[in-house]
Amino acid sequence: MPEHHPETASPSLVGVSYVMPVLNDATHVRAAVESILGQDYTGPVEVLIALGPSIDGTNELVTDLASRDARIRVLENEVGSTPAGLNIGIRAARYPVVVRVDSHSMLPSGYARIAVDTLERTGADNVGGIMDARGETPFERAVALAYTTRVGLGGSAFHVGGDEGPAETVYLGVFRRDALERVGLFDESIKRGQDWELNRRLRETGGTVWFTPELAVTYRPRSTFDRLARQMLSTGLWRGELARRFPAANGIRYFIPPLMVVGVVLGLLAGIGGVIQALAGATPWLLIGFAIPVVYLIFVVVATLIAARGRGASTAARFLVVLPCIHVSWGVGFVLGYLSLTSNIARHTGR
Image 1 (cartoon, rainbow, N blue to C red):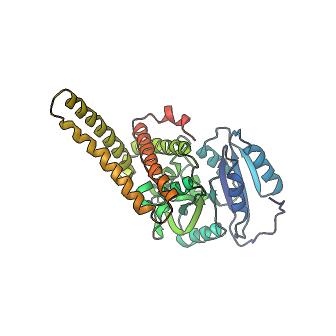
Image 2: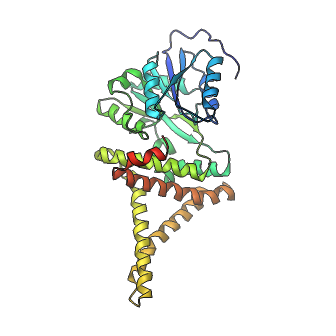
């Protein structure tokens, strides 16, 4: 990235602070930062990178980026978690608009301009749009497809799109800093799902969370089965924790994967019991339990035929594995999190 010397910003536009937590992400962080610096927003800007204790070369990369552009500041995030990094960046922010950025995301050039216009037009506390997942390998493309279809992650507007208007939550978010301060910033005890929980508090205190499909952020999904499973398990853990903490604030879609997991497990156990009955010479009525996992397998096959149609055999074949990986990992995590096991497991499954 070439060295940059700040130009005179438009004094009539509000200043924007981009806040990005980073931990062990040398593969993606440069592209994320370059997408920020490539914005067509002409108001004052700064880029605040909350750097966790990384061991993959991220520290050196981020330091180099900051040395080439005076708009970039690196802040130490000793805890390393996403909410801690976000809060460090927000507290250090100079400007009244805070743009939450993920190191796996790439902002389109008009992102900040559209978001600031939407904040002013709607009076919202937070505006955001779509997580536009895009993969480069066949596996990543299968994961991206699962993210952007209703059978994958449940059909939230920020995954599949929808009409502009008030929303429960949005992807990432562009906030009024005073609104963040009003609700006490991000809850650092929540390692995943902290955006949903913060937006819950914004809405409860009279603020508006605004979704607009004009804000579509490119997101790079996990590149291997193992990384995807760990991500979904961790996400499910914290969603289960949030469902336990705030039972009245969770929609039915959050409970479908854990109910599926419980149903499949019980069906398998019953079916095995039926096999034992048959071996013992009894009527094997428990074999009916196998119907539950069979129905789920049929669902996965049909969903693959519909969702992956026209996307190539390689992507479709991987989608057959990706879809149950997401459902099972997320569902198992939800059950464990709902049973208050989050704190004991989450440290082994990601931030």
